[in-house]
Length: 479
Ligand code: BGC
Image (cartoon, rainbow, N blue to C red; front, side):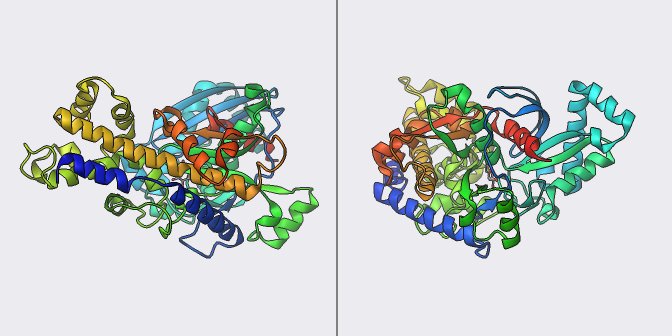
């Protein structure tokens, strides 16, 4: 088989037809309803109640702290909500050392507490002093904790980790209350901060986009109905009717209804859509990448979509092509390939975004990037193949990303009604920076059951700093 033929084969196995899209939307709706009814199916979609019962109006005011753990960085910020749909934000970012992603809970949470202390010392010295002087918990600063992993919440300020994703694997935290863990380490360090709310990053994104929507679009783009992340991982949250969340304990529903509550935000954890692979396109490379992860067989939608996996899929295809004598023939065997090409997770999706759009005559930028990132010299023909493979991977990712969006629009009936428009807040490196991603996603949306008319009425907008501002908004509604 020639290189071109092999590339064609990949292109067709990564293709997502309209029929697959529509079947996937139906499957998503079926699995979402199942997840809302019970937690029994361990391979099902978690559909986790977030204990946030409304989205903000934009009039919320005050200064809150937020801490955000979700991928490669830990962010601490203070957010000043001005009450007019706008806010000011100061933040400090620290990378999570790789060994802490697979160490112990105490190590990780002590590290997070130390970063919160550092932030306070630099930005809120006065508040620190005041709290120390009175030594009263009433003067503690309120913090919203964005924790972007599947977490089963029991209230706005408690929740136990269901499982790690995105390369984290710290077994002693699973089933533990992550709010208590963080609070324990803050208290041990005498840091006057009260963890008042726990939120997934998608819940934060939904809330922050709803807070800002009026300022940005004058409210003309409809109500914000979904908050979604397409970055290192992928996931979405939306507002569901209480009556449809059948798995909520009766007493909780009764209590909420007595307070006039009608809805609750659901963190879908759509990364785990179709873990049984009944509809999603699957190739040998998807199976190989899954086998390399700490959570094989789980979060299989995420492993076809998000930034952490796109580069790894490409790396696996290239290694396979090499073993078949189709590329890099100067290297006689696997062991002689450049080390970085042999190393899982070393090919970043940021590099893919460059290959995607390199339209120069001899693809010099791609050549240089491959040399820098992987120490891999290439011929023009190889670079053209890499570009075609990259485009197949990113297109499949963007196309199937339309599935949960279309499905939630249908599930909630959000577009039903005359001249209704809906707004979707998104955040994450892939949707924000990957060239053409949002356009491809929209192309696919039009092919789903919502059609071109539905696609035109669906507005997808970046919720800048979504997770930080959202966590602050959660803290603002806590008592
Ligand atoms: C996690 C979600 C999170 C998403 C985006 C996934 O791996 O399971 O909780 O929202 O990544 O950060």
